[in-house]
Length: 424
Image (cartoon, rainbow, N blue to C red; front, side):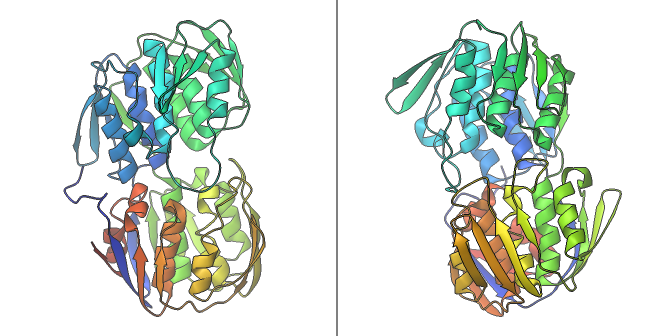
């Protein structure tokens, strides 16, 4: 990883009021690379992942990979993974407990060893995130479940069924069963799959590695696995959430600039919102040209892809703060994801919680500088941008939470004119 210890406790000092201007280069997708690391457990030779981001969640996923017996090198954006010497099937509770994506070791370890032990995973505190859908999918194939100290043990030496219906349209549960079925000598039909862009990319890469998958990008897929999966190089797609976040940054903080590579096809719901509110955003090929200006109020509800992404729900509250009128935002994926509203109200946001999952925001609002905190990854970046919108000096505690998913965030913002520094 990069030399700076991105996991150390730190805070951002933000001086707001300056307009932004310039070009932003978007990093590789967090939610793709975190699944490619467990995938390497199934490969019969090392693989090189290009466009891999240096973020805290990747650092934690690699730490788990190494604890299991894997080896890696990280040079620039090239991540070389070798999982051939992995022999352990029990994830360390302390390390895995910090990262929700540690769950995706379940499928690869079961496919290779027939057994896995893992703790309840961590991540952002945005609501109840049970692993029932994961466990149930493997139980449908005949897995045996037992409880160990601090861990759940799953054993599945040979499937006794060839059909799985996911009890919930879960992204990581879809990825787990997909990885497992791609590495066993059987044809399996999986229904009620999540269809996020990162899953579609994983399906395509598994096909290149040797699996046979029909129905790519659909809610129902059929997978014929291959015990000898192999792929030399993998390029990570650009991060759609980071790309949209920087579009929000230009529109809310003020100024103009470009965002690239901009994954237009993976942000259709967000792009539709931009048109609805009259945002000055023009997309040509893989570049978004953004200029701040008047914004109309809006109503939006989050839902699984292809609906409006829950990961963009908190950043768009800043567009509501800029709009001339009342906007309504409803969070329908996670029950605790509006907790950040109280932080924005401290800064002067005119907001009224209708219930735990719906808020009315009336703009335009002039935010004021104060001391605030990052509650989770996506609300953390929202607080950071709010600090850039406010007049005066804002102190944002727990900056390392933002490091979970945004690469070199203060450097990227300074390059486009933001006045921000990190202190321990």
